[in-house]
Length: 115
Image (tube, rainbow, N blue to C red; front, side, top):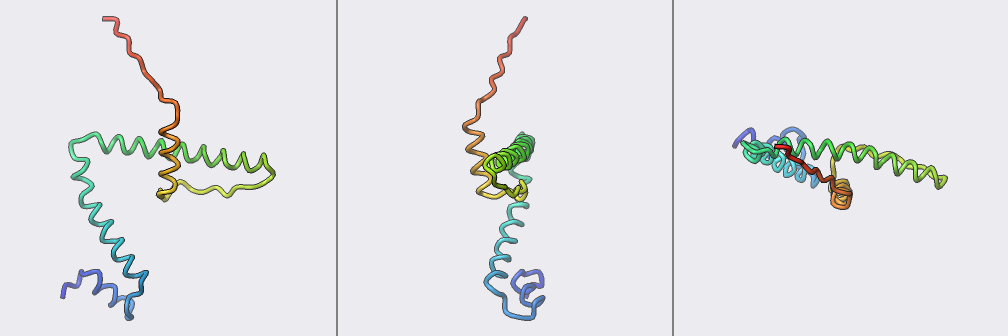
C-alpha cells in the first residue's frame, strides 16, 4: 500500500469511512494537482501567461465596478445589495465577465507611420 495514496490517507486521518463529500474532495484535489503539474507546460515559451494575467486583472477591475453598479442600482430603487467578492472566480462570474467583454466597445488603435 502506498502511504501517499489519497484514499488511504483519507481513511486513516478520519478513522471512519469516507463520506460522499470526502470522496468528492479527493477527486477535486487530484484534478487540481494534475492541472498544476501541466500548467507550466501550457504556457512554456508562449505569451499565454502574460495574457492570462492581464485578463485576470481586467476581470478584477471590471468586477469591482460591476458590483459598485449593482450597489448603486439597488440604492436607487430603495433596496440594498450585498457585494460579492471577485475571488474565487466561479463559472457564473466568468459567464458575466465574458458577456461584458464580448459586448463592450472594442478599442481600435491606428498606428500611423511617418517613415
